[in-house]
Image (tube, rainbow, N blue to C red; front, side, top):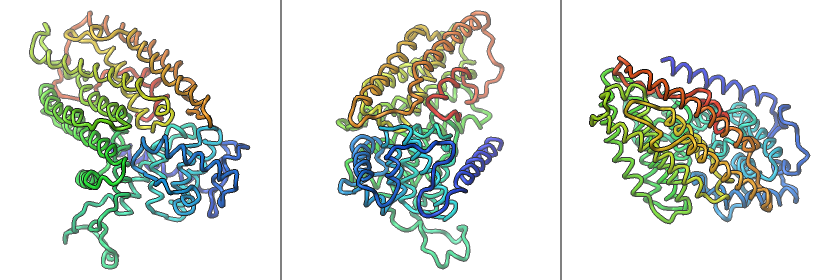
Length: 509
């Protein structure tokens, strides 16, 4: 109940913030930027003025091409055809056009932030002042959400944007399952005069949007925070199967695989981190049995991935994080309480295997990131960044997890951790340097310039806590009297998490 109240308060706070932001916006075109963002002198901001001037039209075409060529293939849930022009998109789907201009404006981060602020203001005006609901509005929200790290400097609207998108899918009837209402279904007098949206056939464009929202929501729940889950497991499966069978666009195969991974993630979440945590009889041995059962689902996903996709490495990254999500349960303080003190039991061997598997998945995730082309690093949507951040966090937790049957030093040292972070720093800095030297130039948000400093501080904190935990483990072998599994009891270091999440996320965990 307390968690539900916190979620509700968070939603109200987000809505209140957006309403206050949009209250000064009037008229039928995007209003001026808020005072928190100084208006730039860049001609780039003219891409939000219709009709487009010749100079703005040229800039819009360049950014549109960048999005179409480099960014859209990494987020297959909103697809723009090759024969679409910026002018046509601005005229027919303005919020989607504006969102694309925001995320693709990488040549000038100040102008990008100004465009991002104007987009927020226009969204508030359209939704809260005019009550607009349309597919193009949902598509614009999804694109804006997908590159959330680009506009984090303006202040997080993650919760609000997520709930707004979920509300739009419901209002548009996209999230409704394909079934007839029963005589006991809720409804009002207007039901006599409206078409039952649940019975109509959804378009593939609507299905992609719905699955895109599911993907973002599921990755956030897996890696960042316990936000409200998307309802409708059956409708998710129906949409995925429909796109899989249609194979209408070249992006659909990649889309289907991303959704499959997150469907398994939701199963893991429900089985281990929700169901078992609310069951008083959930013993550690029950947890390990559940892990063994779910391992088969994870392995089936990994081995059935199609080969030859342009986004192959990103798919592998998602699978590695799925493994991390499954195996990190071995770090819970209550799980090793049944292990014999000599560490020779079958139980202890199984738990050691789970922790070692989590280590291997973390290392595989880092290797996949290092193999990405620099152009992908510059174009990656936000969910991939938080997957990387979560993998680093779990790596740090593994290094400070010590038991009488488990020594992380046998698999990795603090120096290995530091080397991994150094490799990631060099990879991202190399991509940033390539972006600076490209034409037009491409810049990541300014927070990425502090990456190496963050990583150095994280390494220091992990080393300090690893030494402290090792000494504590030698001094005592006392085991908790509680045999109830508690997912919230993960080994953690708040300072390390704060350092990591202040960079990779908006701090909501």
